Length: 251
Image 1 (cartoon, rainbow, N blue to C red):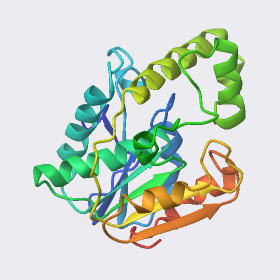
Image 2 (image 1 turned 60 degrees about the horizontal axis):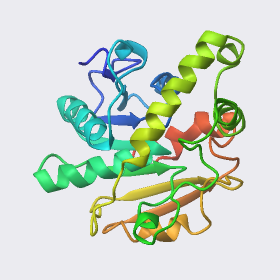
Image 3 (image 1 turned 90 degrees about the horizontal axis):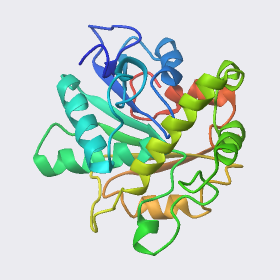
């Protein structure tokens, strides 16, 4: 599990804190690997690999949200042997939030903080809103999904240039959208630990009042940072995210 599910680009046995990173729709762990060199020696990076990709390519995709959250919960708890922070981008933001809620309910070791990046609040669901305006949908054609990934995502050029890799990327995106759409916010769920939100100043996927809705889910400290760029900010800003996480040692 520690090699294929909990992926650590750089082992730091003396680190006093772990940053767990949770993926977005169509994503894996590699996008977080570059952060390991940005973190201080006191923080180790551990990215959670979802089924059906990278070292877990031979496994079936998770069938629904419940299956994915249970898989991720087992992975995090198996490696949380010291203080830790949960970070999630887009779909991963919901995962980080839901994991923190479930850990609190079970009486497990709570994270030092939950950090949500480029995600609308689950409270939109209670108000009958589309939680992901301008986002990829199950009824989108392959061309529409690929255009979305080119416009809002960070799909490498070598994937775009290879028909087989493009097909794999589309299958992965569709599987994750199906899981995303099965998520159901449980009324009254909040997190007691500090909650930090990142949003891009030109991100059309995120609603204008996302921060206000996330603040309602934070029973403790809340912080909102607006960063330059769209859904994945700019390459320079993305690379600097670990330095902007308030709860991390040395940030």
